[in-house]
Length: 305
Image (cartoon, rainbow, N blue to C red; front, side, top):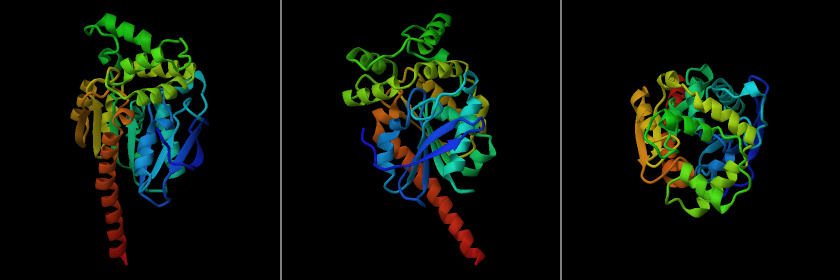
């Protein structure tokens, strides 16, 4: 996984004072794309998308609180409201007033979009959105990490696994096999498995556990209905963490769903497993909605002269 060199690094302060690490790639003034990573990941997760999109877009990425270079917070600081607060802070720090961007969230990043969807700052800046490998509720009940038929026993075991307090330790052949089973498709290339393992294992244990409790009780169904911008949905057909049934529910409930893409054989880490396909969806949203809005703004300015 390569990375376009020399990002512009920024910091933002969230509503509770938490500091967020931000990186901006590409030319100032180019159409903006904001990429939001998921649970146990970091800005490194979007390396392929940054490389592909920053040639002609301004790509903004940030570390969710407690991940990457954004410091951990107190016990009460891990909530879906905090996710929305953090996104607001990042948009305020990187976009001009009224400037539109495509917002793409993977897993907990998609949940961030749903949590923020009704907020004025979100509506000021969102031109279109991508919900990638995510869901709005019933994550534990629908998870297929435990190979059993659905029911209370599977749900209980899944909750224990996702919230396990054991340290992940160093990346080893065994840990990579476990990670691939839980989060990636069976045919994922070894180098992509290794890249994801390095990112996930770098997440602090306390942060991983704190967010697991939030995800275990997640209910953002109301936020789906408030996500009123054109929104695409992407899912991997072999995703055990957020199975395709969750993506289909999102597509049915979204006010303006512009399509659902199910990537055959891919698991939960779709932007790393199938980078070209995910990048193509993001680029399609940018071409279809950022360009249109910029043209409309120009037309308005010309008619006013």
